Length: 264
Image (cartoon, rainbow, N blue to C red):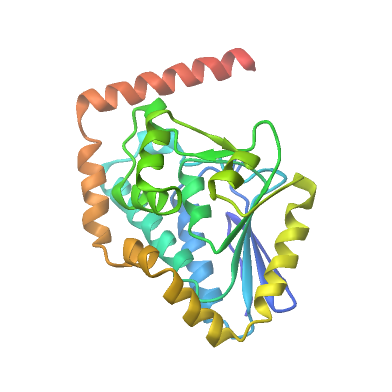
């Protein structure tokens, strides 16, 4: 089977796939990227020649998270589609029956953090700007319920709530200490380690791996599958229609644009 996607670089190596985000300078998460991710991982899961996969970014950049500027220009129908697709990607990653390793090659905050947390094993590169975590409060953005639940599943309900209050971002060593990632290595080593670990997992008989994965992640499966995705997306869209909230988000984006202009 041949794989191609506009926002992804997909490399088939022997009996596994490397799915590299390739969506602009910062790999911002937008509707085209989500569409490609969903289709690709659903296809890889059905491909009998594929025994596992790696989700990766480029060196020093995994993903900057949601494309906030794009979201701000969407109409209600487009926003509904975006959030549905994001949650369906979460389902495609969590439900992937084969070994799935995440190579976090750079910064991965907010929406990128949640996608990484949907994989089986995470290896993160060291770096001053290489961080993960949920910092939406800085942008006056509501984190959708399913995303909150996944974050709390990994970090713990009390700790995740405190981290969100503080807009806490973790570097690779801190993320390792908190259990958000499984390894913290030099960024140049991330892909090699990801491939080594994936090959180790692929030795396990596929049916044994798939069934055990389902049993051990029972609660995570409930979080992403026992949900009404269209309704959750609708709730997110309706919530963000609040004019006062929209004004705050616009204010933040204007401030961000001003800072970026000064840096340039």
